[in-house]
Picture 1 (tube, helix red, strand yellow):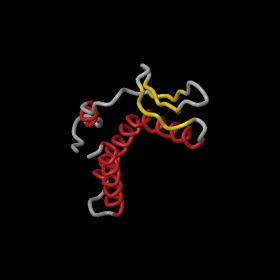
Picture 2 (cartoon, helix red, strand yellow):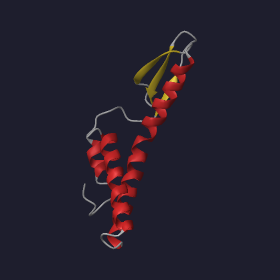
Picture 3 (cartoon, helix red, strand yellow):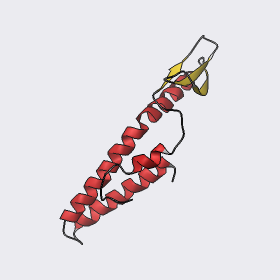
Length: 118
């Protein structure tokens, strides 16, 4: 990943992922219906099982929270990597601060790649 130019270069890569646009929300039509995750335009994303099972509602909420915040988290993490790399450039090469900043940025880049499915 290059840090010259825009911090958010990876956003173009994310645009190539074809998933139903967020935000998502949960809906339950009746007591016997499953907890359903839908998009803002009403497209069904997933069924999370019966409303009667409390963990199904919790699971749906977790999935929705993760999906709806995914892009924002990626952008903020990419910015944090850029800041760490920039700060490392200002630190003396070979210093503990330099090494720690690069190690933290490497870890954050690994997390970004995992989140993007790379």
